[in-house]
Image (cartoon, rainbow, N blue to C red; front, top):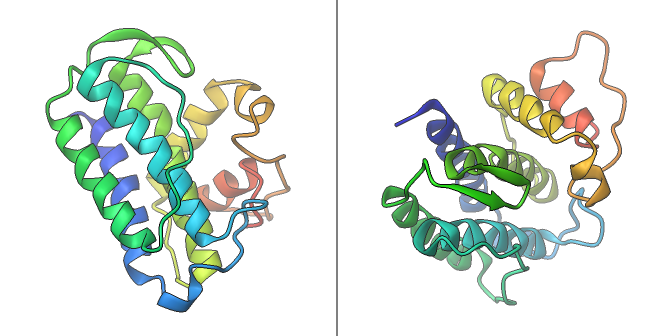
Length: 183
């Protein structure tokens, strides 16, 4: 497995671990993502990763859509996680295409998307009171990938405006600040 795919799986596993720790009474809690509660954040993540899985399975490129409403966000997430894992196992990672962020290989698209479950693992943890330790190396690679997209993530409102990182910030703090989170 390439480092890109390994990093993506690690980001998804981190999100998965946080979902598993969310208390039943916390799914309605607000999140650092404006206008999303914890359930809606999971629906967003499912929508993004379901769209990625569809590309892996069919080669058809569609923009992510918010997943349908659910009374059981953890179960909905498990369905997405399992479907994504199966789809990526059979994917042609070298397939070149015009994907969400422009022309690139499918593997590069997967690498670009790793920042989304990484960021939202932290967001969900903040919402539910679950401690989340963001891996420094994933934060460094995610920061490099997000920055490589130029102004697209902010134009498309995929990330918030950058906030100042604290003096002596860790890679995780620098990453969170760049994507508009108070580290």
